[in-house]
Length: 132
Length: 132
DNA sequence: ACCATAGTATCACACAATGGTACTTTGTCA
DNA sequence: TGACAAAGTACCATTGTGTGATACTATGGT
Figure 1 (cartoon, rainbow over the protein chains, first blue to last red):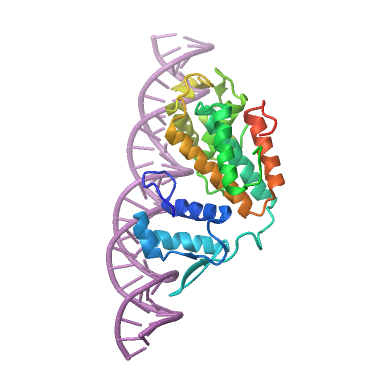
Figure 2 (figure 1 turned 135 degrees about the vertical axis):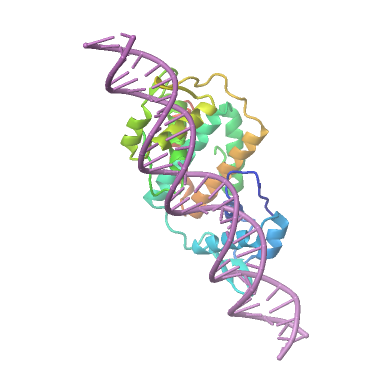
């Protein structure tokens, strides 16, 4: 379902959260779908069950999933009841976009090369767009 | 020149590095330009001089600037001698792109709204593109 | 009732991020 | 040529974060 890189500088919890968020955004995980139990996912990923539990709690705090003791964790909201992106959100996204582009450029990646990557990512999340 | 947010979850050093990388990528900082002394920039940003010094060292480690005791720090390479983006780099960029898009979508931001942000960011880094 | 299943709570440890303070190198000017 | 200012460096202390170990509690089936 998803993978984590132990040697990454990104914390394991964040990697898991990011993966699940992406899965929800792409529709791979639908409203009502059940997430694997913390122990199972932890075993699959090779991390401690606490790490997965923390990721689940973080997702719950943002309202993306609902979790209950003894009954598991499942996706609650996908597109509904989303907070309309406020100014802080937009500012953060802009900065991340700039950082992403700056890193691509400074990594020596040609524009066209990066556009291909961008298009692929965008297609996964917002399948409609053509130009990206 | 640049700003940092003390309440951000992104480390101060990383914010500074990111800001300077972006400035180089946009051409705002050119080859040979001198960066402000660590004490001055630290004062301007409201952080400790060590924090700026670490950012400078990190930039030097990637070859973007050259720094020497008693003589200051200046930009050494902008587009030249860049490591041609390898597969790991591309994979990392793809994941970050997906995460960015996923967050935008889950934040409730409409496609068109995000596209505007994206276009703005891209224009700053790679001024040529129109469609982004 | 009992037991398996699923999430939770508490503690411990390691490491990263930041700041305090003192130091070394370089250049300039009297 | 000695002193001083300017600029980066080193080392240490403190605090917070990420991860794991272990034990606990809630739920539901049989």
